[in-house]
Image 1 (spheres, rainbow, N blue to C red):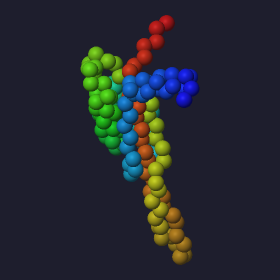
Image 2 (image 1 turned 90 degrees about the horizontal axis):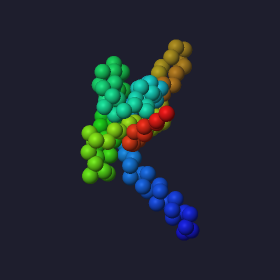
Image 3 (image 1 turned 60 degrees about the horizontal axis):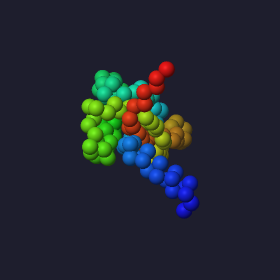
Image 4 (image 1 turned 135 degrees about the vertical axis):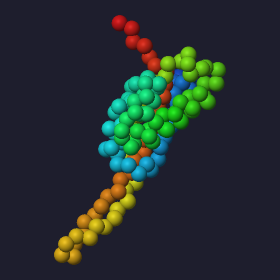
Length: 135
């Protein structure tokens, strides 16, 4: 491996140590409904995001809150020397991808059938240190 590649690999490894990732797979909610909740907490400080999710009326917010708590726990496991109170964390990335689709048949008039698509999704949250932008 060349010098540039090894230096870049070390930089990426150091960046990856700061981030904590949590993934929820095959959640039986449509991706569109889950994205509404994900948009509420994108880029928000972690404690504020937990408060938003806690008091949201959406059903998907319960699952996203649990996933965010998992990401926070992953960050604490990666950074054992640092305390959560001293380090301001934020939801750096959150994205929702479509998952597997269950296809069902709904009987329709005159011998026809309509297809019902029961959608699922995959949610990924990345928690990282908050970056303060000074003007």
